[in-house]
Structures are given as structure tokens and as C-alpha cells.
Length: 92
Image (tube, rainbow, N blue to C red; front, side, top):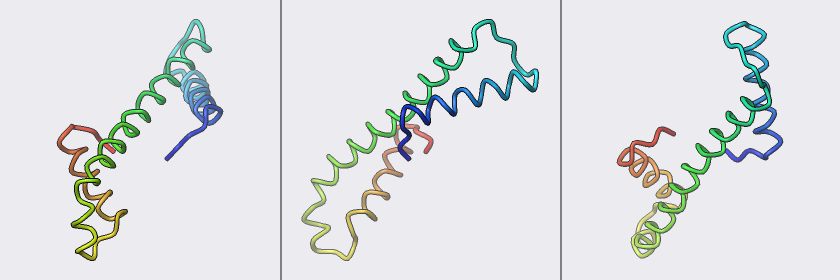
């Protein structure tokens, strides 16, 4: 799932506002905490982007096999992505 920068900011702000309102956290600088959370979200999305790229590269090797079998590119992509994520310890 792709998120725009505005959506990431909104989610980050909502997390901080909710936690502060529920008195679960106290912060001196809300904007700094919001930016930190936004950075973490972006970094996590980039982990999946890099995984997707590695899967696409791997699927080039399976092109002939896909042509011979009834498996579609998207089915094989999902399968290989799950396997690579498990191997690399990535939780999707």
C-alpha cells in the first residue's frame, strides 16, 4: 500500500495526538515526535519497496517457466515475495 507524504504526516500526527490525549505519552516537542514517526513509516515502506525490487529481479529468471506453466506473473510475484520476506525476516 502506497502512502502519500500528506497521508504519512496525517497518520503520524494522529498517533501523537491520540497518545498525548490518552495521557500515554508526554512530549516536549510534538512536531519533532511527529517527524520521527513519519520517518519510521517511510523507512518501513522503503523496506517493502526494496523487497519488491528484489522479487522483480528474481522473476526475470522465471520468465521461461511462467510461459510454460499456468501461473501468472502476479501469482508468482506474491509467492516469491512471501518466500523472500520469510528468508529475510521481513514481516508484511
